[in-house]
Image (cartoon, rainbow, N blue to C red; front, side, top):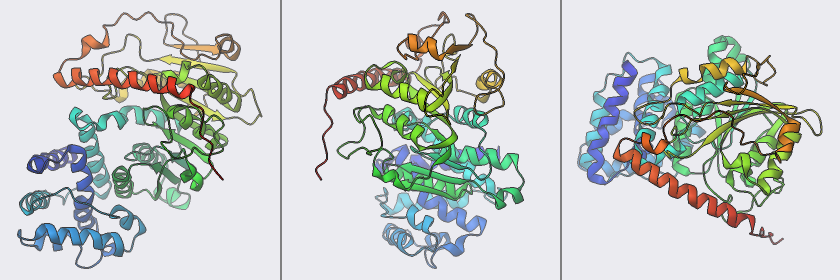
Length: 471
């Protein structure tokens, strides 16, 4: 409860910034700078910061001229901090504050909070809570990129990351998957065992401020994570190691790569973004490595390149489980998504024998702002999935009236490798009728427009010849 009180009080300070026209997402990004200084003071890592650029120096400054001092301080931290991670957090800093008075009010508000009875491990949880607050605000637009934490936790519990493994997220965002994996591993092992054989974390994030938030988030949660600034679908990914575990929610969108060239090792260059990420993930696994990736419905049924990618996925990997997710769990209310669970096979081809489907969408509650997604909503799925992260536990097909069913590779081949399989009769109300608030209705309308544009771009992509790079 102490955590929640601190989160709410910090979040309430954002109202001070309305006069400067600062969005919620910008506010969380700005807090990356301010909270780090305060937390460094509280948990004894101030020695990593240059003298004169610490929280007490900021607090001691008079209101007049505070903004100028703060800007100089940020620049100094980005060039002179002892830690490479801290330098990266403060690299090329820009503040969204415009007035001394507003900056002073936020600093004063943070300084008045009671930090003393918070343990070190809670600092990261507080920051995670602020990121989640930002995602819950429809107006911020951040929610379409934020993976609900109940879903993240369920995926981690089924995938069971272990000590010593290389764990990656090629679309890291705020670092939620990496942090959840680390908390799971720490909960399963002693501090000594963790220290002697700690996991190796890698992420890739294309957006500068989001990477900054990810660096801050992983640092505060005690992860020694390498977060590459770049696009995993390009040569920026050369620094990634073969992975034991990949957990990802690639961004929803259309054609990948912008004007930059896709990596040469991705065999199907005329793919949309999700299909390109899927290729990256199954090619990035070690033999026997495992992955869980959240993807929209179109990946399951798109013809052309989509069919080729699915065929190669089932050849190279054991695609053992697909979880059909409820509608409405992302702020783009109408988007329909799934989690694909697979392991890189040891054979050259034909590594998928059967695919199990769990339908958590049909006749499910209408999730949204008023009905949040909770850990308990995944308990039955996790029970059916079983204890083996590679999907090898003994399983039971529940038949036409159950949520868990098995289809052979031959049955899927007979469907032209279409994986959009459903069997339950939908008796729930339409999602449009479930939208209650004006914000949810607006988000639903925006979702339909975005979905339409995505489909148009995908069709255009199918008929666009890839541009060859000049040597």
